[in-house]
Length: 137
Image (cartoon, rainbow, N blue to C red; front, top):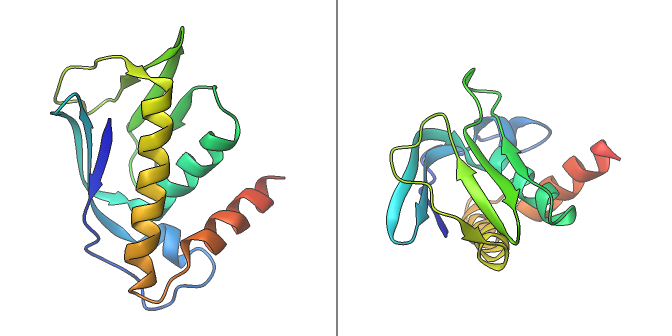
């Protein structure tokens, strides 16, 4: 499992809600070398926050709905035994079970890679994630 993305928009104001609500770009979910999902203008930081929160409550299911789209789930992982079953209202490929370790590794890699990209734009993803998690406490 792999998340692929490109940042196309980063806000000038990186405080408060701006970074999660205005950092956009195409997001793809790949399963076993095949593209399962493509979202053209995903809110990448919003997705990273959802993944980070999900990583803290493993092995529960993941459910991602966005403030930008009415249809949902944009992406979900439902627990099925020791694997996760992916789903999406916009799936364009076949959903194949994902081993738990692969799902966790893909989420961590996405957060790390997005964080590195955002650092080049003067933004701190770790801070934004920590603030979002604290707000839920």
